[in-house]
Length: 393
Ligand code: HEM
Image 1 (cartoon, rainbow, N blue to C red):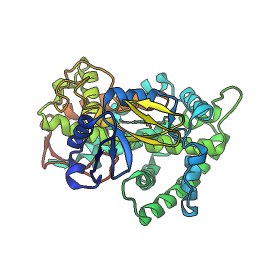
Image 2: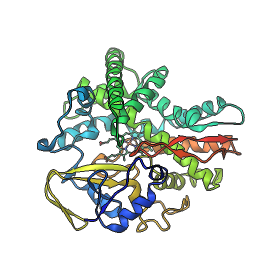
Image 3: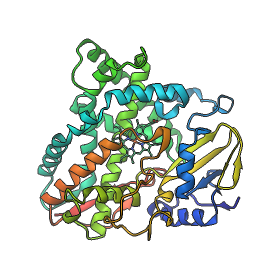
Image 4: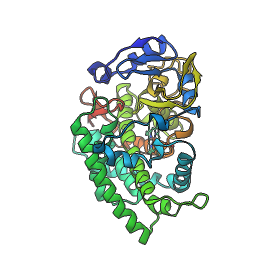
């Protein structure tokens, strides 16, 4: 296996990681990324096959489970009940209970709410120009997910702060301060949700937390710890990635001089899929190997880990002609922004609805929307999102 080195905090990589993914893809099915000491792939067929193969998974085999340092115990105590970190029957049970509460009908009914919220956020924007991340991309998903769960909207700033501190645990080169902030945020978040869940047990409403309390699968309900971990997962996963897809998407549209005519009801689906394909917000996911497996001519053993470059697979010229070109009119075919297989994003229908509803409102209300400065990506790998998005209108 060929080895390639690339610091994930190198400024040119942070701004544009795609040339590195291209090198990885050309060098073989798997390449050892020396900075992570991890075999990674950026080929669409290999990423797709690996995500769907049950001989691989997110949860470490017990004998390889990393030792958890005591100071990080509160953070990992939540992860221990998070469906994203589980496999097999425990994962299936949690996912099924959440899907029961998170129905397509319940999501589709949010469209008018999303449009109204987008209008309100635009009404509040200052004259002439602003940072669209602060005024639009950040508040929209967090307010929506708070409403959906039935958490008071006034808590949105806290939710944003907790979630930002917690995702610091997944970033390359995290510091002791990042860890301490993540643990503090976890403790505050857990205490907040414990109160919210207690209140909703007494007085349920028509919200996701109340539906999760009621959801039943083969006679079992979610325990309070499972409820807390699920709410944290939904609140965190439910906004971080959407914020950055809105930011990256608006950037792609404006840089390519593409506006409202690609956001019409007939064309919106293709445009949203192209936004998700060309510049997704989450780039690298790992999988543990549970039994010997051959992938792309490479044999892996139980206890090995592999890295799947979702954003690299989205730029594979096999499925996508001229993959670096932003072409909203391309034939729609599945890309890897939401993953695939057992952990395929539960929030994909909601995220697609948010994008397909909010972006047309934004471009119709602000027809002269322009970039005021070249947007820069934040140094947060494996997240790929902008620092700010300063626009004029
Ligand atoms: C554009 C926005 C989003 C993107 C790009 C995204 C991406 C992803 C990806 C790639 C995964 C799979 C990770 C893996 O296989 O290792 C995932 C899982 C997940 N996402 Fe999303 N997501 C988005 C929005 C949302 C929203 C809005 C929600 C919730 C309301 C959500 C909830 C989840 C959950 C619960 C999982 C775990 C599923 C499981 O483990 O079975 N996501 N997401």
